[in-house]
Structure formats: structure tokens, C-alpha cells
Length: 295
Image (tube, rainbow, N blue to C red; front, side):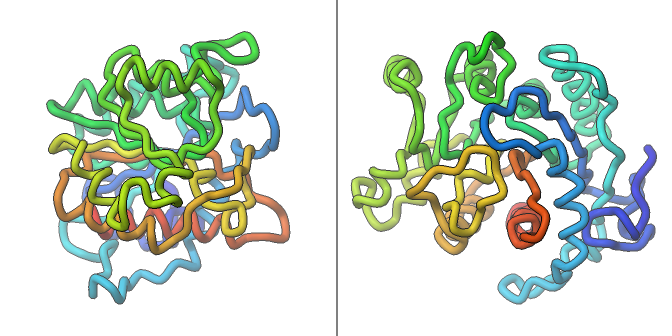
């Protein structure tokens, strides 16, 4: 499996720690952008993450470890999925096969978007590979429209496609949706932690514990960076006020890593903006922090 070299890979780590054979973690870039409806640029997200990661420190002072250099770990950065010219289900089928192969090779797969449409594929690949799996969805939007702007394969519909094969979905940070999505959540008992409810104390001070309580043993995470507040994450297509911040998110991820088996995750909707590299860096550090917590 061809991987990127030290000048272009995640964290800028040498071949000894980033070759496919010896790496436990594999990064799969999917620079797919076909249905963005407001801000553009998610197709450049994976490259932005790779580039910013070169400035993330290897050492995690909280956990006293250098994950990427530990025996049995390593991080291989792949070339993008071969989806150029493909849209909708055809693109998702390619991504699904790519992720499924990586899982069968016993890799922990991190999929880098690209718009949120792509997440249906890695979620399905993991769902088909693991029993008792919950989907944990971080987002400002519920993405449960059945169709949007003439297609069922829009970034606004990805979670509806996931709900076609599992309703075991927990959503965190939601603060923008249409009435039909709200009704779908009620009817199908999708566990949704709305931003207004968290901010007004309706789930108590330890709301992170309530999120985790509803999850099964195995968990797949799909993380749209617009979950974060626009003040720290302006580089995304559809910002929404009342977003979330770093430490409260780390509290949830930290507890999750201690109590559940995270089987894989994707991070999507970063749209790098020239002159403001911080959101790219935040996203890269988020990914590395998740790996430190989960593996």
C-alpha cells in the first residue's frame, strides 16, 4: 500500500513509523466535495490537515506518551481514495471498499474529509465488521434530511443514509435542523444532545457521562468540525453559533476512551482558509489527541 513520505504525511514522521506494514493506524484522505451548499473548500481539508499536523508535538504531556513512536502503533498516511470524477453512491462504494480492506488488514482507520457525505461509507464498513456498534455523531447539524437540493447523497443527508442500516446513533452539539429532521429524531428515538439543552443545564454538569451511557461497547465516531464554536473553528462550510470548545470536548473523548472501544473515526468539513492556519492545526491536534485517548 503506497504511503506519503515524511514531507507530506501526518505528523511528518519517518518511514520507520509510517510504513503501511508496521502501522496500526491508517489515514485515508477523501477530498470529496460535490454538494457543499454555503461555504466551499472542504475538498482541501485532508491536505490542510496533513500540512498542519507537521506542527503538532509528538509528546502528549497529559498522557505522558509519544503515541506515534510506540511499538505496535505507527501512523501510515495513504494517498487519497480514487474517487476523482465520481459522485454520490459511486463514490461511496469506492470509499466503502477501501475502508473495508483496511479493516480486514487489521488497521485502525481514520478517514479524512471532504464533505460529510463521505462518512456513510466508513460507518457502513465498520458496522459490517463489528458487532454491537454505536455511531457517535459530533455536529452542529443533524444531517437527517432524506433529500437535499435534488440528491439523497448530500452532506445534509448523510445521517439519513446511515439510519437506513442502524438507528443506534447518538448526536452531540446539534443546533440547526429542519422540522422534518426533528420529527425523524422523535419517531426513531435518535439520541440527540442539543446544544441549547447542554448549555442550559438540562443534562446536568456531567452531560458527557450521559452521552457515553447510551453507547454500546464498540463506538464509531463521525466528527464534523462545525460542532466547534465559530470563534475557534471558522474554517468550515456552515458555521453555527452556540458551539463547543476544546476542553469540554476532551472531557467527553477522554472518558469515552476509558469506557468504550472506539473502532474508528472520521473527521470532516474542514475548509482551510488562506491566512488562518489555526483551524487546520486544531483539527490535526484533535485527530492526534483522539488517537492518544483511544489506542
